[in-house]
Every structure is written in C-alpha cells, then in structure tokens.
Image 1 (cartoon, rainbow over the protein chains, first blue to last red):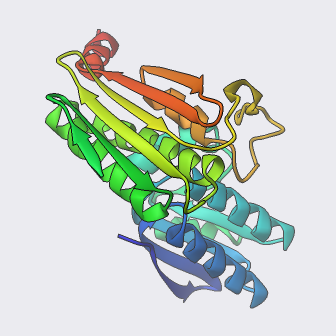
Image 2 (cartoon, rainbow over the protein chains, first blue to last red; image 1 turned 180 degrees about the horizontal axis):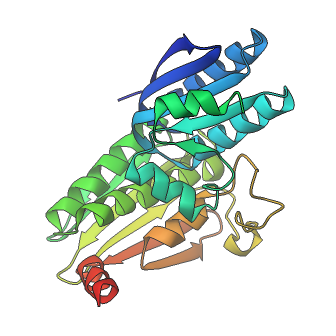
Length: 115
Length: 151
C-alpha cells in the first residue's frame, strides 16, 4: 500500500492525514512533495497525522527528518500526531523521539502551535 | 529465477524497488511460518528490506545488468537470510554512527544501524566485487526476552 495524503486546515494549522507506508520510492516522495508544497504556500505550521501510517523504513525516517528541517528553516514548526507503536519504537531506537514534538491528541496538538 | 532445497530457497532478482518489496514480503512470510512473534516478524521484514535496499540502491545502483540474490533458510533454531549484490563492495566500519549528535539530523545512514538493531547476528563479506550480508534471527528469543523483562 502506497502513501496517501490529505490536508485540512484547523485554526490556521495544516493537518496532514497520512495513511499507508513511508518507504523508499513513492511513499517518501509523497511526504517530501506534500511538505514542500505547503511551505511554498506559506503554510509552515504543520501537524503530520501518522495514525494510519503502518510502516516507515530508514528512507522514510530520513524524509521525516528532512521535512522537519525544511519547515524549521522557514521559521515554521512540524509536529507529529498519533504515532503507532511501531513508528514510536523506531523513533526511539534512532534517538529521534525527543527531536520531534509528538502529540496523541489533535486538539491539544493544534493548541500547542499558539504557545 | 529461484532454487529450492528442503529448508532453503533463493531468488536471483533484478535491481528494482519492486523486488525490494517482494523480498520484504517473503521475509515476513518466512518469519510468520517460522513461529516468530509479531514484533520479530516486523523487525525481520524491516531488516531484510533495509539490506535489500542497500543491495539495489547502494550496491548495484539500479544497474539493470546487475542482479541481487536473496536466500532464506529456516532451521529449528533460526531464520537465516543472505543477500548478495554485485556492487563495488561495502565497508560497514566506514558507515558513520547515526546516533552521534552530528549525524542525528542527517537524511540517510540509518539502514545498517536498523539491521543490527533488529537481528541477532549480522555478518558482512566482501566478495570483490559485491557484498554479501547474512542476517540471523533466533527462534524463541523474543519470548525469552519478554520473560526476562517481566521478572
């Protein structure tokens, strides 16, 4: 299953609902293009909802790191929402769990951008 | 093309991402059939995917003339997967530590680290040309570890 991505706006925050796999090839490209497109449109407060992302490989992790850096460089913020246990474990093993701001609740995640 | 012995099956494959996906799916299937727990099934499939990506992308560089060979062998004790490419060769010692602060935010370089994290044994062999990586996961280790942690 490849990666599907759908954007919605909540209180000025872009929530990107992703589902499928973020792996080398199509999945990584979808993530890269989605974030690049948002940043180019000036939407630099991004919440990636990974609740339906079943699998991320090392290329996908690299793409998440790259997206984080891209948004940061535009003085924006990229945060993660609803990680599955597998994805959470992967970010812990790679010591990236504390690099990203991670939320389990959408409303509080949206609010956190205004703090 | 594939060859099959009693508990061993091997495939010679073109260097494509489609074949990386197939290799990963087969590893998952072997892990399920080998009686591994759910976490191990996922870890084995992921380690094999990372090794296959290395063979196709970094080893063979998607060269249509170069193949990669994947062999799966299941024994009562272990699942052993060997992946061989026809690339320039890889020195695993030269791969930077992805957990080092200066590498943490790099986009790439986590594949071998993940393979080592998820498998019980990982061996590299330089074939000149090419690299062979052998991944071993022992049956029952996950259950034993869980028992150990609950003590």
